[in-house]
Image (cartoon, rainbow over all chains, first blue to last red; front, side, top):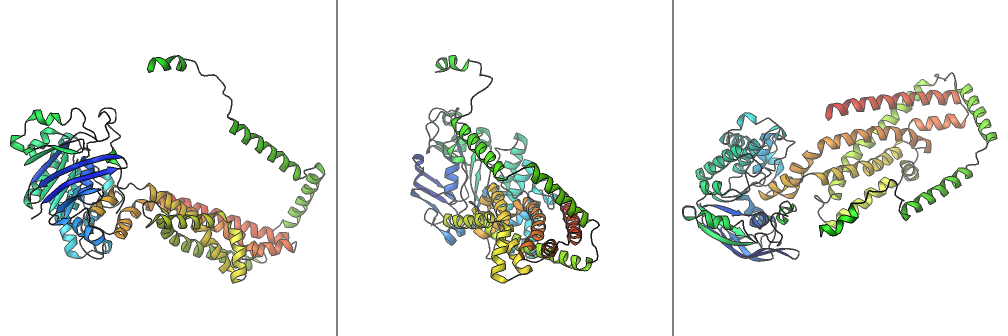
Length: 272
Length: 268
């Protein structure tokens, strides 16, 4: 039911042409991993998918709804069905783990913050939050402050927050890039278990080829703002995957080694 | 490219470098103003000696302080504290919406932000004594004028610092909640304000100290509180009475600063 269809998508930052007539379809329940070098436009594509960035032309259709033209309440109702997992976890660090998980339901009902604030939230919401926390094996940390957790634990809490939202589609933007390899594998295992349990569609960007091959149903490669590689996991060969990281990979034309840390797609998005 | 630059960078930097022409300009203008100002104060040995004699007369009459009016002084001091507490509380509560409208990441529209920042800057730039003079004209003598002056002064100070802190909050968590379909107000209240609370309570405590100090002086222009008693005593040359008022003010202000630093240590 929850498919994504991207057609002829173009996105510019000023004069910089980031997404170049990009086409991609993801079927319902499919687990797709997107690979690509720094600065090739992966994060920009992710931000366009839930309307945090608006492309200049083209369409993104999620479940018969066009994200690119949706505004206000309609955009919010589309976002409600899309859970996002971030590289930097993006938890409110001053608050408790439990409060952050409750925040996952903020967009689900009228009343917003008032219906998910710990002291005011209805009993079933609180019970669901506790259930989501147990699912990611973090129930014992419910009362801890997020700032006191390790990176891997924070990402698990972020997954619990995402579960609280009961989404149909998961977008994961480099979910393990800030974690050490062991914590990274734990988080990927957990994320994929959860996704399979609920039969969600997942679109995940990754840096590591081997991780991609361990989890993906299908691997998609991106280079300089375009999809250049697309195959089922089993038929993806190492050689063509390695090609993704060679030559002109970036959208700004700079050499990927010089500008490793100045990727244009890392700019913070405005709050819509 | 590198070989071209090498002869230049291989020179040892000089020990002293001449300031820019702009720095020279600032120095000359400052020196001019300083000496001009010094001479306009007409400082002479004769005036200094006379001043010292007057000061000793004042001290002679002020000591021992006159405590006979303690009940009046205590009541006036209490009124001052009430002014400060009411004014600063209302001021801080109002500072939050002002700060939200003035911050880049929370303002609904750039024009709203510009207008709000202009209002805050005005409240800050006009000194509290002048606000008090204006409100004495508007609402008459008494503590209400002082309270209004403190409210505006507090907003000018606190809203600015609140807004700076709000703009520093990292955008990630707010983006995450926006991406889950949450509304803008919920996102601001749920993800941005909680990150600013520690800094906001520190700023609020400074505001309280500041308000108590200004509440004392506001009375000098008739805006209620102990300042009224002090200015009356000074004008009637009742220096012993004035001295007791000054001591009370000193004790209360020091006491409050201690209390506030104690609370600050707990909060942060």
